[in-house]
Structure formats: C-alpha cells, structure tokens
Image (cartoon, rainbow, N blue to C red):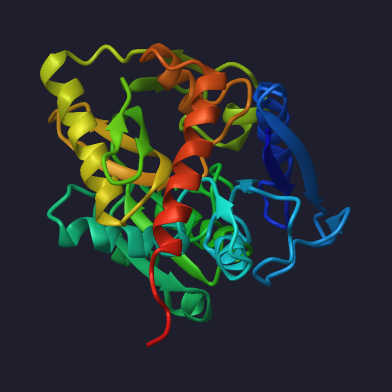
Length: 324
C-alpha cells in the first residue's frame, strides 16, 4: 500500500516564492510508485488550498505523513509543527522546540553558547528601542538581521555608522527583534545533517558569492554564485565542520534534517556557527540535497529517508502517555 504524503508549501513569509520552488523539486522527486501525493498550498494571505489541515486527531484520514516545505515565518518556526502535533500527524523535519529555537537567531546563538559552541559576537535591539540605538557604540563592519527570517531577507552589511539606522529600519519591517553581529571576513561553509537520535553529517560545501555576501538575490535570482562540493578544507577542518554541525543539531534537539551554516575566518582559521536551517531549501540550486548527493545519497532516496524518519518519530511519540 502506498504511503499518503501531504506536501504543504507557499505560506505567509517573505520566502513564499522559495517555498514554491522547493516544493516543485520535492513533488517531482517523490517516487509515485511508493507514495500517493496530495498538495496543500497556502497563499500569501494565509488561505489554504484546497482546505486546511484540521488540528484534531483522526480528522485527516487521507494523510499518513506531512512534508512541510514552508521556509521562514509561519512554517519553519514551530507554528505549523504545533498544528501537526495537535492533529496527531507524522511530519518531516524538526519538532516544535527545535523549529522555534533554530528560527530565532538570538535564541539559537544562546543555546550554542551554552554548549560552548563557537558563535560570532552579537547584540539584540528591539524595534521599540531603535530610536535610542547609538551608531557610535558599535564596531564596524557589522551585519544587521531580523531575528526570525531566512534566505537573507532583510539583512544588511553595514560598513559605517551613518548606514546603521537604515539597516535597522529594514530589519524591523520583518521582526520586532533585530540581531546586530560582528562581520567576519570569512569563507562560507555549509553542512547537511540527517537523522533523529543518531544523526549523520554530510560532506560540507563552500559557497562562493558573486556579491559582497550571499544575499537573497545571489541565492535565487542572479544565478552567479559558485559552489564547491565537497569544500576544499583539508581533512582536519572537514571533520571539525561535521562534528560542530552534529553538536549544533543536538544543542537545539533537532530531528529529521537541518543545514548548518558556518563562517571560516580567513585571518585566523577559526570556525563559527552562523545559523541552522531546519527546513533547508530543496530548489534546483539548494545545497542541502546536493551535499547529500555528493555524500552518496541521491535525491529520491533522501526524500524516502526523511519520510521514514518522520514516521519513526511519530511512532515513538505515540508510545508516550499524556494522562495518569
């Protein structure tokens, strides 16, 4: 009997179009001899097509497992994961806690620091406090980011104090919490992680941006960035990346999948964990599946494994008791 897989995509975040592109790749890659696939599209206004999944156990009998392909806010941040938990549905990817913690760049850095994992120095500015932010109080260059968003939306590199206010105001359009962090002259390294209790890390890759940093346009519009898979790092650094990726994954209690992004400082050779993406891109140029393919796991087999992991976790959770 075929597994009934529901793919949810679109959504209300600034990464709506990226979600559509990722979903197209996943829909094309799912083996239709193994899966009966249904689609749930969420418009930018939050309307579900054809109908919303109901948050009641047993109310969605046509679904065995959900594959959320919702990048960013209202999809990667624990909101949809909470809905699927209420509906008692198996779903691909991280659970509610890891999704929320991984999405918030400030909380994520704090959890990494608690485990003594290397992160770049940062500060938080709240939108209500923008007027009191003193541009002369920071060292430059620096990055200004919305705390809860992905695909480099709303991010600015600021080189001098006069440009800080505009960068803060841009980030504040997307979140009320803004992260300001030291800019590092670094190589951009990524590593894919897959698994539940015993996760594995892929061979890492290196991103070679065509612009000053790997922003939204460089990721999805210009088609000029270059990639090295595997990254040319040397054996020791490669293993250090993979070890840190797994430690970071466990620090937020992630399951299913994630892509961990690193900064390799050019002057010192120090590695910093930049962020984690619990629903990484699956577009034709996305690194998460490409790294696994370079590590020997082809795209269709990767999708199979993610679905297996979702069902495995769901069965474990069903064995728990929620009443005396």
